[in-house]
Length: 107
Image (cartoon, rainbow, N blue to C red; front, side, top):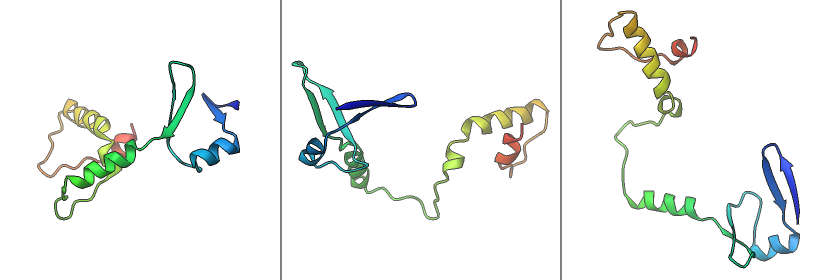
């Protein structure tokens, strides 16, 4: 097997025989470990599928009209900073205040 560097990561090229025997295909997730005797063990990483199955088993339903917004979920730090900046300027926040991501990012 051959080891290659790509950026900060190392990749191991697996021989076709190993890929075929393990039934691997491009994009598969695998776990690689080294046993006490030094042998390398490779097996399918099914943690993601197991986590998704557990979530589906919760039978949880989102509230009506719910829409997940990744940008909104990831902007908590910027929102906190923008609100702190507004408060520092003694600008009162109205009851209908809505965080403006573009305004926060322009600073």
